[in-house]
Length: 526
Image: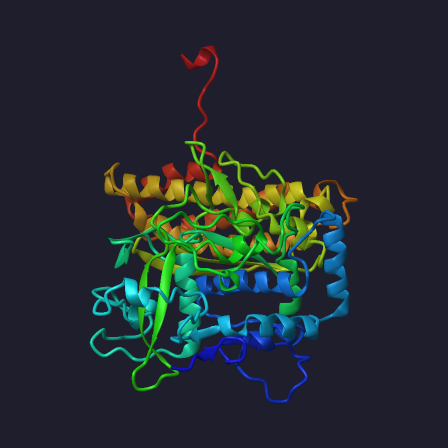
């Protein structure tokens, strides 16, 4: 059976073309070869599902490092930055380097490859013999946005009894989604060396929110997303899964990540194999989805695109994706070397190096609010205005202002929540009530307005470092956020304020907006 659907040339990856793109008729999707060769004419990826966007970026960063020779830094990071600058000045990726890399691994880029000795891309062909062919996962399980089994529908209805064959573009992106965001727990049984088991770990980015520099073109975005390898990294040992000479032993532990390319692409603990559609061999009709390694990892693989925090037990974990939390509330944790907070947040390593590409880079946050196993809540996708110029190393008097401005916005959001909950509980005379009704409405009113206020004041901050505290008028900012909180409070409580009990509850709780009742200290407090 011939191999089909080669990601190098098959138009699988959706893109947005830049206004200066040369061709009159531009395709909505391209293969990896054209994506790299014309990245300077592409504005960005057009992947609608945030986790799939993040997963694809991780793969493209590794490909970029390979074709640009930025997969080693034996002379140190300064030399690596200079070589990246040379690529940036060239304005596009070198065609010969791209063509040579694609030709070298062309046979590993097929999505469907049932030939003897075939190695379909990001898959394990051994599953056809190690899993029960009568208990496959099905395409609905493979496609992240489809319901499967007894799960509810998200975007459209699909039946496991008569599943619609997905497009190749859906398949390749969902394949990546499983490798990076796949759930832990029970999966299809896989038998290796006479032992059958059916339990998988969670994908390396599951529940996490990742942050990526975003440039004017995909070319700029991919270069800004690279981090220099350590001096000891050897490109020949730091391999992506499609570069492995032999598939790893599923009875053993996952292969160690020895450098940026293996960190970016080889952290999966799931194994998948796509099955061609019987009526159309160029389409996918089924899939095996199971565990990749019997032995689990000791912890999450390091990732240069997440905010790392420290738990109360002293363990490092990535900041979780939260669809209710706006991106500006994480901004100081992205820009500062030592941002404030009891969780000791550590900014993503990529931002230390992205600033060397451009001061005008934006930050894109991508993730999936979900739990570690089966529950999926909502995609998270947000983009800031240009902010990379405010990274701490470049503007020594601006970054404290970013933290203060963010802190003021959050302070009055927290006070508003506390005031509304107190007022509601007093109004209904139940101190154990969760008080979600008023709190949720207040949050819906306050946070979007606070975000607009934050960005308006953020854009006025000084970038030169010549003005103390970036020129932030902290008192004016405090008054502005307080005004928004008071306005939201009055709007939410207006319906109750017309009654005597309601008016009393509302007015007594209003003090929380101003910091609450201060405790007395000293002799008079006795």
